[in-house]
Length: 85
Image (cartoon, rainbow, N blue to C red; front, side):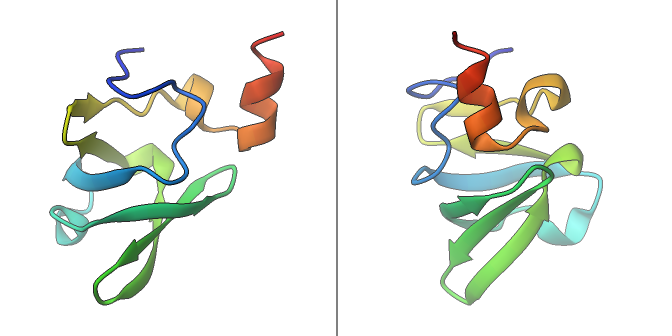
């Protein structure tokens, strides 16, 4: 997994842009990840909150691309923390 962020476990609070997606209508959405479920990111944008499926998009931040590896990101945040131990 090629994450260019503090860690692959702390996506909440990150300013992100959807750089690529199977759904071309959501490409370019920018905002802060405010919440995360097993399969979705909730992104607060200028136009309100958007629910974005994890498995169809690629995120980037100001440092580079955040690859959404479904084997690691398709878990709840606390489940990913358990993988550290």
